[in-house]
Image (cartoon, rainbow, N blue to C red):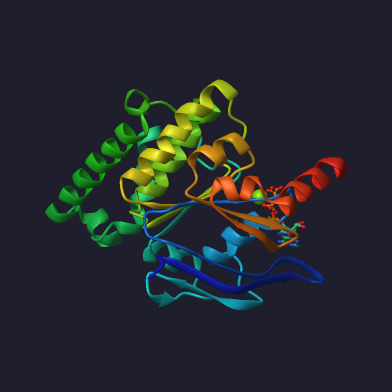
Length: 255
Ligand SMILES: Nc1ncnc2c1ncn2[C@@H]1O[C@H](COP(=O)(O)OP(=O)(O)OP(=O)(O)O)[C@@H](O)[C@H]1O
Ligand SMILES: [Mg+2]
């Protein structure tokens, strides 16, 4: 059974079909890339999968359950993690605290424990802090834990935003252009991090414009154009697809 199954997924904004009749599935452990020209509907698809938008029609199944119409907090709890196209760290907070905030959904002792600082609450706090440190080590930011997040480079902020999402123990991680705004020399390290996340057992859906990255990292690729799935296959299959080449050349001519 696939981990994620989307069928006939459609989102209309007025007369505009941002996502139109999309059907695909993602297997456990797979790295699936979603590519396509600007405005193709990639981010809208993520917004549908994470409950930010309600589909106009279609069904989303995740981990054996119908999650169509779930609220964002419900999709996080079910194991769907997501980073945003524009980096969203809390810039005025320290790096370590950002990861702690990312875990806040899992704190069990609640407000009362935080006020009276029960033994359980203190143990929970220690556990959360330790886990945040482990996650920072995992993404390669151990030596920055006390820095203000807003002072990190764009590349380090991307790493931090991945640690923040991993803090909620996602089964699938949706990455919306994880190398956007990052220097070319620094992209290799981010690619390695994405592979490392996949090796750790997390399924990945990746939106990316950098074709070399997509071709080297993906198990499978889906190509969207005007909200429609125009091709699907291995990197080699998609790279040789006439319609894909046309969609990209067309987009370049317009741009
Ligand atoms: N909230 C919204 N209201 C109206 N139209 C929207 C909304 N969100 C997205 N759209 C439109 O839906 C289409 C798809 O947008 P989307 O952001 O999903 O594209 P994208 O593939 O992520 O593009 P990019 O590569 O530039 O990030 C676009 O035409 C966009 O203008
Ligand atoms: Mg987008």
